[in-house]
Image 1 (cartoon, rainbow, N blue to C red):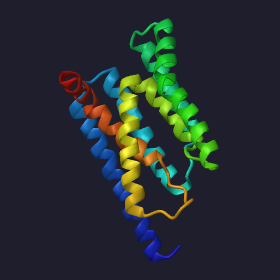
Image 2: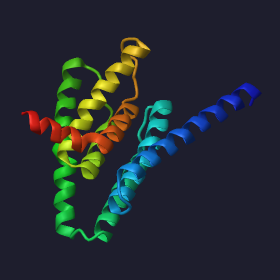
Image 3: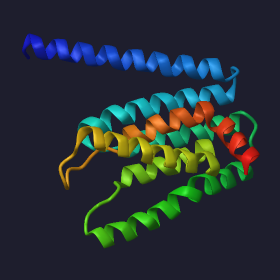
Image 4: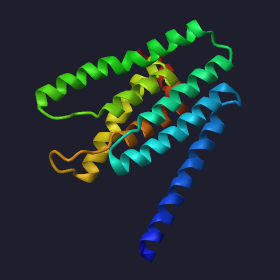
Length: 191
């Protein structure tokens, strides 16, 4: 491995560490210590890891998503949620956005004769639905689309080139975790 490649890797690692510190600090300043802070810190690490992997290899590993679900289930039970409430929370939160989005993607794939969204992105929206609930997950989808459009315009991707959507979802989810509730309250106040 050449010196310039080593230097590039050091810079990239340094950027990842700084972003991780920034994400953790922003969550710590936003939430009181407890279950909510713990779940969002784990989600933050999960999203940062997904961003790195998806940006480089265009894949979101199922193992990361399963870890996120398992952590949520164990943490929710530990924090006092009943198994019945947890089941319905996962069913409603996970499926409310992921299932309609899956149906939309199937239709879009058929109409456009190409893959419009990867399966990992859909599974990530299921996990986000579990962590955030339906309303905040819909908001995450909206912002992820805006970020994704911005990135694709910036990169000027060639027709047919696959662009990772995971980083856009992760950035949108971080924003929604920090300010989504306030945005929904503001929107509710003007409607």
